[in-house]
Image 1: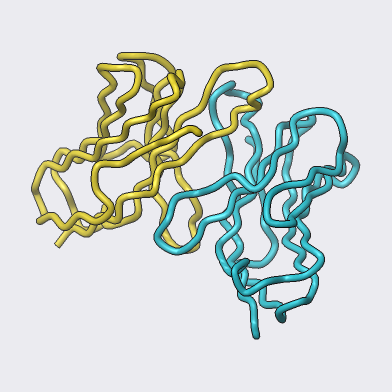
Image 2: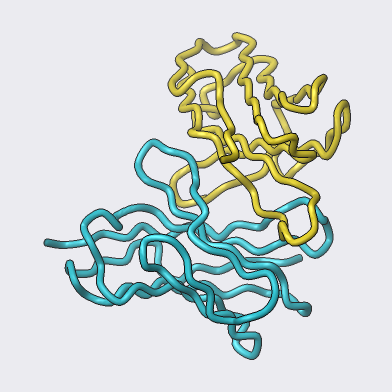
Length: 115
Length: 114
């Protein structure tokens, strides 16, 4: 089974702190994604990566950066956390394989609260 | 730009009743289509997907969905709701402009009354 793990289920940080959210997948997937999920807004893509050291902005990249130094690990960084970044953060991965149809596999999520 | 519309942010059914969650997409080319389920405080789990072939797709937990190209729809159904089906459901389509991305609907929360 594909497994996507996230470093924390719950996180509380203070305004202005630098925050790191870590995501690891164990199925050798090429693609990894970070989303945030807010009530009524569904999932919004922050950044994605299609290869090591490669990244592309999603729909809402402002205030975030990412790092992918190894294929299995994709980190989301909040350079200076603000209260409007309080949200549920979901990591996902997918394969480029034929027939996968872009199916994404999700981690359990990190609920971040910024005070 | 492509979009996915899920009609109804909340749907309430009685236990044992038919579940119907609606999903329409905008695309000129038949896309890949997905339904995901999210239980409280968890990530998303794939229910079913349509890539090619038979347009009626069966998934886990008794759910199924039918791809109707003429209606650009991919509605999710289950003949008889269980209390354990209470969750949020997301429809998604592959992004034809990007071979990696999915476009998600805003979600439908299913409530099951005893």
